[in-house]
Length: 314
Image (tube, helix red, strand yellow):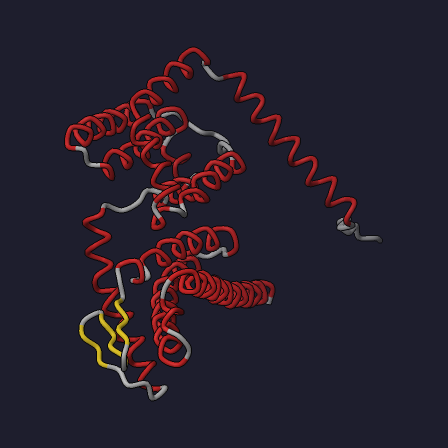
């Protein structure tokens, strides 16, 4: 008696992948044939007219505002992920709920336009997209596309009032951490608020040095990495939560290095090109730290899954 074993050769795996891609493309082709193109074109034109202003302002902020620059990466990745994930099997339209949510989004858009409130206008654009998906494919499709919609939401900059409220405590925290590290290196320091006084020099930890920019970018990377690499909700949540302490600690180290170089080497290292370069290099350190955490969580997930399989087969 012989037992058939599955063929796991590279050629067979490549054939399976090609077949899967062909099936997915066939599904997309069939769905495109079922689209009501006149209604879809009218909807797209209405959406473009209604949300052209907030979308144009959003793209402008992505390009010009450093704190919003991560949107240049997140928005295309969100679109690509939605296309790659596709429409779930058995998607059922929910037109009543979709129209109700779309009405709320349009009202918010108009009210925010009258009040010149950018964040609400941009948030209403995301809400309108969610409403259209619910109208055509149902709530479960929104849940199926949770990652693209999350990335799209993260690409919308927070209101300036919120960023200022968040930046101030981050400034003080970075100042305290940097001053404490300088004292450990026997550098005479006098800390006053967010001003670090060294002999003959003063370091002012500005809003740009608060670390809010790196926290926003690192949070976006953490959400994307958790969804692409990890399998469990607890593992994904842990990775996303770890972005905050990593960004805060690395920013405190940046303040320390700036003070250390200004005191021991040259005051010119605290401003200009060298200071910006130092920030970029330490952001790479943040990314590598987050990658290390993701790798550890991934190993733990594998170990837990293997033990569960052993218990089931025992």
